[in-house]
Image 1 (cartoon, helix red, strand yellow):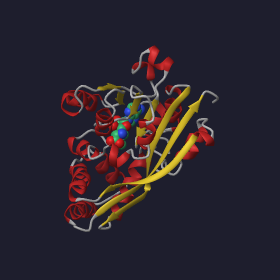
Image 2: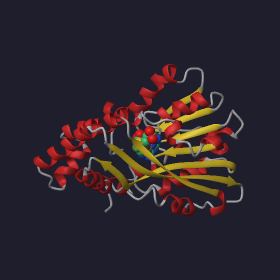
Image 3: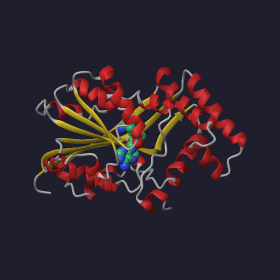
Image 4: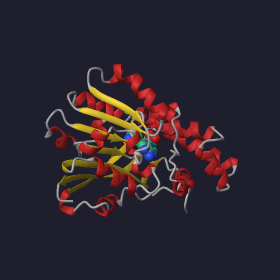
Length: 289
Ligand SMILES: C[S@@+](CC[C@H](N)C(=O)[O-])C[C@H]1O[C@@H](n2cnc3c(N)ncnc32)[C@H](O)[C@@H]1O
């Protein structure tokens, strides 16, 4: 089903930037999300340049800047408000580092980067769970390849796949609604499992790609609360994507209440967790493709 986004080429982000949602994303850091990429970054000269595409609230970006303080790290995101929030947080989270945040659409690079930056390219162009939020995300991956240095540049992606999600206590209504929201927005819910195919499709050779997989998890009470809490906030907001999708697909108020209760159970249950398989690729350009 083609969404408005696909027809107009105009981008928007279906999850939004409510504070609760940003707090849930802020659980992420280099240790929990970028284990696959750290050895590669450590092997680069310390002044490397890195682009974080769709950085969101920037907890991964800030952590990268703290670990690699001599590197030039640029986080870009469609959300003007989230970028303003990140820039205000630099003195708090990564003072004295080479971090910077810019607002704009990655598919319009001239609005984000200077001609020199586009011409010279970045050492590393990275994204974490951004492709799955963008319709026709193959174009984003193609753009990431274009923005990496032609010889020696690296494109690194870690992606989710909504079908790979496990929740306990069980919450089948949540998984079903989430699928429908992604589909309603023209998003590829199987981006994770297709990541390697997509990398080949944009022109990387298989011998340029290192592929791996790991699990994104919300296990401790501190991790479950922001995840389930942000769902509860979205369910309480009649204008949220969750509520709009629920209305569109004929969910009754009683079903919404079941969903809300399930999320409350997830917060309270000592045996509760949410696990999501993530696929990972590191693609190295070598000047020949
Ligand atoms: C699921 S969030 C991931 C945030 C962050 N990478 C993380 O893992 O914590 C996806 C982000 O991609 C951004 N985004 C979506 N479309 C974009 C586009 N066309 N250009 C730049 N950023 C985009 C959204 O605004 C959102 O903040």
